[in-house]
Length: 280
Image 1 (cartoon, helix red, strand yellow):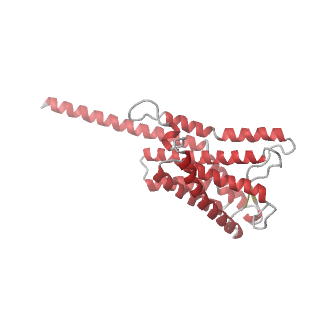
Image 2: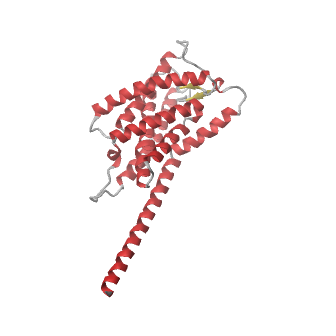
Image 3: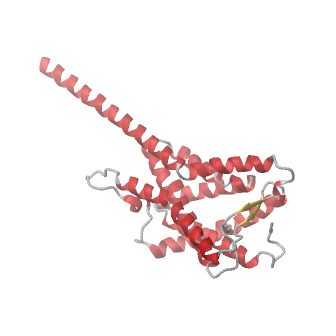
């Protein structure tokens, strides 16, 4: 009888230790997630909020103000400007490298190294499928997103978005394409793949995780105005649902890259040449 009682106390102690380890692990994951966001898109969201408040309190309507992307750092010195462009694109990808490292450090069930970016579906196992799915998603979201932007701006809820204001130099289009790809990799890896994986491990419900990911995506687009926020929240909901269904961020990276490439390069080619495209 005493032996049984002793074994029961031992099992209870082991259970409490396991609970303590689980709680400590969740706290570490929570801090890790906050640090990653503070170094990347969480900080961008706060910056966008401050910029939006500034735009709201500035004289004149939102549509009379401009949100500029992909600007020049040295307009009269093209090689220096190119160096700055490459530097900006490369350093923006550092948080993705951090996420890849953290995912590699995950202890899988069988031991050894974790899945890395392959665990969230960013790899070359299905390039054709990822690109095809991405193209379909881009066509639907890109077209509707453009119409929504034009309507939001006309209604005074959005700034005039200027996707690029680079000088006409030989590297302009390649840099715009590289910038679009960088945006897509950073956003989909961190806001969808990494964040949902961490929130799942932290015990969040799928609905709460969807809301967190979508609102975060909307937050760092607030610099564009209310339309940019709402449109990207809707995009975030769609992307989370597709990720849950496919289990891969690859198609989402492809879709996002195609949307941004069309926006950046299309603006470079059409701005000032067609009447329906707003310019600043």
